[in-house]
Length: 367
Image (cartoon, rainbow, N blue to C red):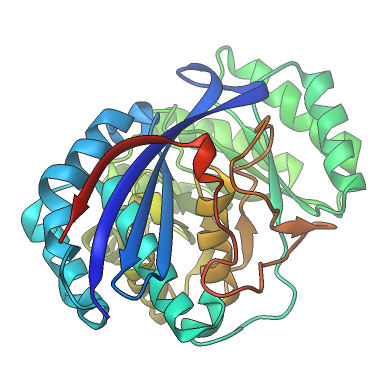
């Protein structure tokens, strides 16, 4: 079986009501889709979010260009069984651009699992865990709104919550974390995510101030590339740290482990460059006896399904796959959470397919 055609599409997915991030408000997701067609007519799909320049420096136009000019030639006309060789060439052909690589990697995996006639998680080796808990995130906003939303998530079955922090003055963070803890009680696991907002000195003092609210972990307290700063914070506080923006490559992961900088990895396909690289990060975390979380950016259902299949074939402490929350009309139907636990589509491959009529063609390459 050879890959005969690669097509790229885009779609703008409005959010209601949207969410506030440290760079401003996000009101829509700008998605990039990849479709691979084999010479026997079978199809594989991939999806990533494009409007995340604040996170990775990538954009929808840049992702499309990377796929068109550098990555498509590596797979079109190639036998599907040689996908490992193609993926190995991605980094040699193009530095960075993890989102573009992830979109194509996901499509290759979807096509391979569909060709085998099994769900992707089975193609990856089968279920490794029983019930996998899901988590939900409380974005920036007033303390009373955070408390009300936290109670709503708990009523839906979620037992793990994360509060975005990094506001100024710091008293606003304290008020929101306190309000959430008081609203949900001590049986709910609570984490905070600073999104690189603090200096090392600030992180140490502020984490100490928040630890009274029984935190499970603190995600990315300092700048992404300040790995020694992460290690300094980790030594000074009791709460484990989670690396998100600091964790892209295997080299990042090995450095974090060597420095003793983290207790958790936050693994995301869009950062790792797809399922292949994400599985390597997971193997390293397991070898180092570190906990890890399978997460994502806010993304559509197709991208969410890919991460959910990987989670089921792994043993994460929990999953953070709320990426479809608030999408008004996703071209890909489905969901991955039921009563706070992970559920995975059981059809071949990812088990879901987008409605092509709701996608905008960007380019096509044919063998």
